[in-house]
Image 1: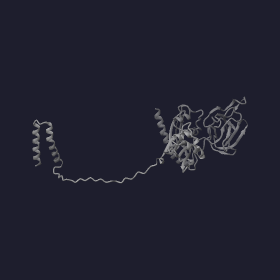
Image 2: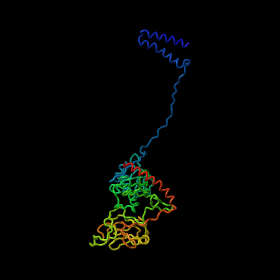
Image 3: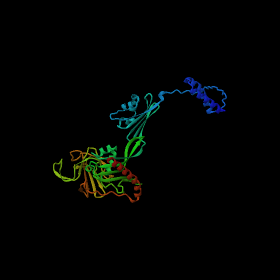
Image 4: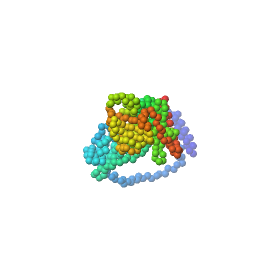
Length: 438
C-alpha cells in the first residue's frame, strides 16, 4: 500500500514539473508532501499519542553569602634588595605602612639585621589590605630573620635557616684572571678560592696562569626556599694549565677525615702549599743579592715577599706546631711553625695574629695564622715568607715539596664508588665545553 501511494505522488510531481507552474506555487504544493514522505521514511508505523505537558516551578533555598571583611584579606609581597636601599625604601616597595612599621622595627633590638641590607638578597612580607605588617622574612647570609605579629606586638626570631643542598656544574676559561673567569661562568668567589687552594701545590696562581687555560667544577650550593644562601664544598674540579690537566675529587673517610685526591686515588696535596696567600703578587723573590729598601745595602733576600693589602689572611702552608708567635727585630710580628722535625716556615711583617695563635698551638695546613701588615723593616704592607730545611733557607717556589700521605688501602673501594660518578660529571662538562668551542 505505501508503495502505491508513493507512485501516485511521484506521478503528480512529474506532471507539475512539466507544466509551467510558477515556482512559488510549486514549492507550496510540494513541501507538504515532502514532509509527509520524510515522516514516513523515518518512522512509517509510529503511533503518535497525545502527551500531557505540565510546567513545574520550584523555589530553591540558596545560602546567604557571608559578609566579608576586606581588612581580613592578607597578601605576600616580595622585593629584591638593591644597592643604596634603606629599610624605608624596602617597606615602601613591599606596600607596608612604613611609618608605623619602621617605628616598631627601630624599637625592636633583635630586628636590627634589617639595617644591614645585602644587595641581591630578598625580603618577603605579609600585609593586610590596609598595609599593616603581619609577617616578614629576611635571609641574611645563613641567618633567617622572622617577624610575626602576635596580638598588638611583633615577635622576632633569628636563627640558622633551613637549607637544602644542590649540586652545580660549571666550566670556564681564563681570559684575564681566575676571579673574572668564575664570574663569567656564574660561580661564586668562594668556589674560585677553593679551586685555587686545591690546585695550589701544582699550579702557582700568581705566575702560572695563561690566557686560554680552562677549568670545570662540580660543587654544592645551599638554598633556602629557592633562594641561594651560599656556595658550599667543591666536590671535584679539573684544571688545564699550559696544556697539562689536573684533577681533584673530594673524599671523606668513615672517620670524618677528608681531602682531595686524583682520579686514581693519589693525594693531590703536598706536605706544603706553594703560597701562604690565596691571591697576591710577588714583590720580591728569593735571591742572594738584593738592595734592601730600608737598610739601603746589598744583602741576601732569603724568602719571598707577597704584596697584599693590610689585613689579608695568611695561611700556614703545612700542618705543624707553632714554635714562635710574637715580635722579632726586622721581621716585626712573626709566626714560626715547625713541620715534622726538619722543616720550618716563617711569616713576617704581620699586622696581627689570628685568634688562638700562640707558641705550642697545633695548626693544620691552610689554617689562618695571621694577617698581612707592614711591621718591622717594611716599606709597605706585604708578607715575608721563608721556607727552611734544617734551618737552611730554601726557595719555596722552586724546591720539590714532599708528598702528603696517600689514600689508605682500606678506603679504596669507597673512594672508587665516590669518584666514578664525579668523573662522569667532569667528562660531561668536558664534552659540553669542547662542543661549544668547535
